[in-house]
Image 1 (spheres, rainbow, N blue to C red):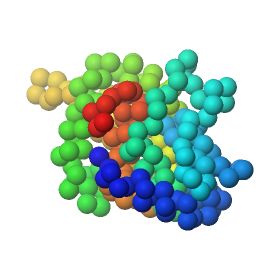
Image 2 (cartoon, helix red, strand yellow):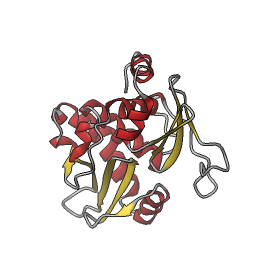
Image 3 (cartoon, one colour):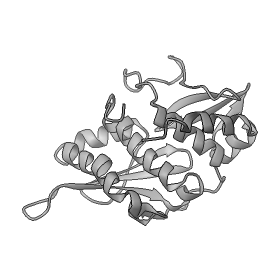
Image 4 (spheres, rainbow, N blue to C red):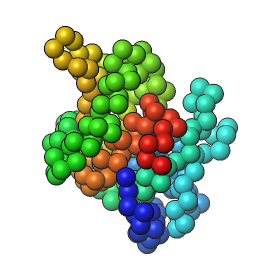
Amino acid sequence: MCSRNALPVVLEDFASRDPREMADLSGAAFQDNTIFLRYCNLPLEITHPQGEINFLERGKNSKIEGRSPEGLSSDEKVVILQYLTRASGLPVRGQWLSFLDLRGGQLHWKPFQKEALEPLAKKFYNKKDLFLKLAFEHGGSLLEQGDAGVVIPVFPRIPLAFILWDGGEEFVPRSTILYDSVAETYLTTAGLYVLGIQSLIRIWFPGDTRFA
């Protein structure tokens, strides 16, 4: 999804910035040249200025119910570093926007449906207990929308809402992903596109290699 040149560019930007300021604005912590950030409720450590990103070592809350998390994809690394370098420091607003409502979202709407919304609905519309279980493992909380809805703290200041509908005789099962309106002050629409898909894969499709 990301350009092959995206990671070197964002690493250069990350290295040039004040790590304490990035941590403060993004809701992370900074100590000993390392930023500590939670992503999908998983603890990460990001070295500065190198920009090396790793899950915290075993014994430091890196495992979820006995499962070690899959390694980070290049797209995840890019969007994590972009979140840190672009963070505005603004608080969550509690106002939800669909991807289509984001600035320029209509330009990416069809691929977003194909890569995120349709797979989520197809796999989990009749497995809502599993959908919720996996969401709760990643820090999710119930959202009273649709037939099953959850809010995931994907980043400390970018929560995403994931909602399923069963469908029926006249309607196919469907899903949506909602963004808090503050998200546009942290990432571009292209970054939010990547974040929506990669967080969905991280939580509900671990090991998916569709973008390898």
